[in-house]
Image (tube, rainbow, N blue to C red):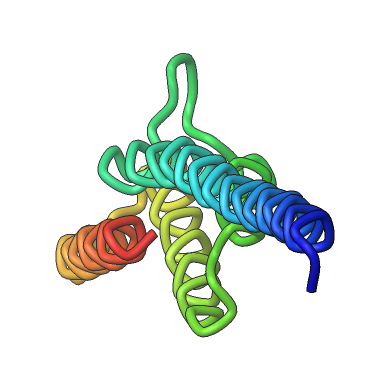
Length: 139
């Protein structure tokens, strides 16, 4: 190998190394940006759920309907990890239970076990918030 060939090989190797480094850096930065976006999106959506859950669905001007609560929780269902699909079902069951409690409150027909139902719904809501907090911590 002549000196010229050696220099050309060295320059070609350096160019290839730079290209590979650039591609890997671009790939990793894309993954980091996606993770950052996902965490921000989850934080926003999970905060909406936590607010709804911890206030038992009470809104600004009136109590929300089942349809409106489902709409507010739709983004969260889309952002849940695949392995946590059961959380979406728990949120749906919680939403139905809260709507039933609100209907009882509107009709002013509290039953004897209304307080125990209220406590069950409130406790399930707190559990859901804890689950969402754990998911967010892993993101």
